[in-house]
Image 1 (cartoon, rainbow, N blue to C red):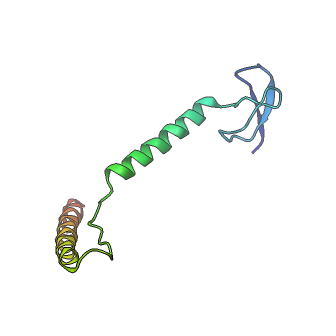
Image 2: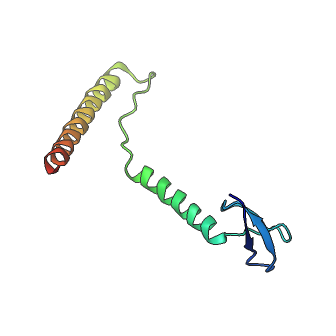
Length: 98
């Protein structure tokens, strides 16, 4: 969908494809700087949430001694079991709530 938009910097009308990264034909500035900043903030929020809600399980290095690898496997099993139980409880609550 093609339309035109007035550049906030130079005041000239430029063709605008309603894409936040479209630039002015005259001064090459961004036609919709608010949408660009909003998109950047949304991406930063997405990255922050992915870091906040990620689960870091125990990493088992192949070069660890056998006794350390054994303890890590036991700990990993406990972590996975705990995550599975919590996930089931949350699913059950959501299912019963409707």
